[in-house]
Length: 73
Image (cartoon, rainbow, N blue to C red; front, side, top):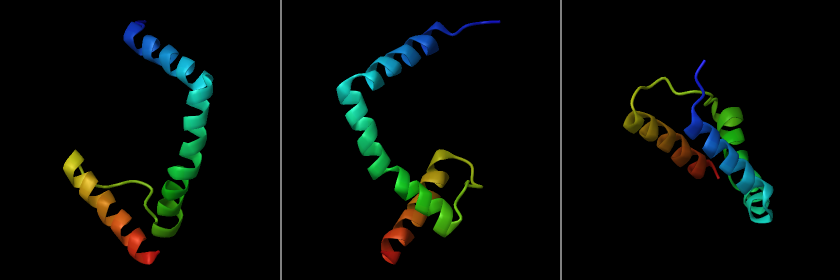
């Protein structure tokens, strides 16, 4: 079994950042900014996964969904 030391380093760094007061404040804001949008995409638009390949295609697909969500507002 191999252990990726770089992965462990970044995992510990993230844990340190999230345990700080500033990190917790940022994480709390994420709950109000990002998560509801993803929830609406899943619930109202049925977007659970993309069936496209390639980063540009996926960006275009999600971009269309987000534009349609803005039009519905």
